[in-house]
Amino acid sequence: MVLSEFAFDVLSNDFDLSEFDCGDTDINAFLKDDALNYQREKLANTYLFHFDKKPIAYFSILNDCLHDKGYEANTWNRFHRKHKIPNNKRIRQYPAVKIGRLGVEKTHQGSGLAYELMDFIKGFTLFNHKPACRLLLLDAYNKPQQQKYYLRNDFQFLDNSSTQDITQLMYFDLIQLS
Image (cartoon, rainbow, N blue to C red; front, side):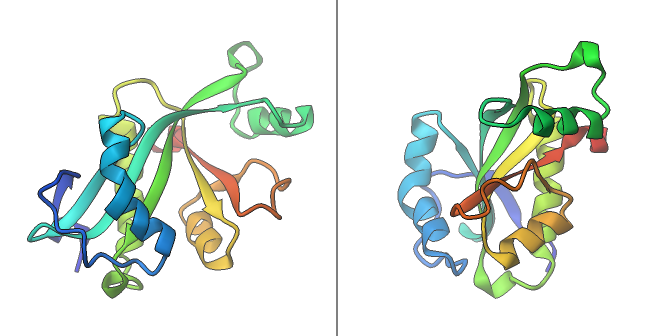
């Protein structure tokens, strides 16, 4: 199956979330227990691809920024040079959208659906997000499978200082798509 075969909607009380299982307890619990509350509080919006109101895949996004606090000057300079940001346009924080959570039902894992989902999120962020946004951010689990997935989707690590943490900041430069 391909992503376009499913309906796409913002999360509401109309969906049956009870059977969704992506294989990760935290990702499942966010969708079932927290996502609607985050939406009500204007902290993150959650979108679903679904079949008969049963989610097949979902993602939550929120506004964020990448700022220079906590990074060494050489890391920040390397970021500027790598993305060819002229000296007179360099700022201390770059507008971003963060992927808060992302999950694909276990029955559809390994089908390529997760890669389609990430391509969709990139386009959705670039074309449907009204404020200016340069970067797509996420906190990737420090697990080989998750990091391999994000690296294959052209996300990059800003630095390697948090390799011992549970998650590690990664980014995708949306300017690549425009």
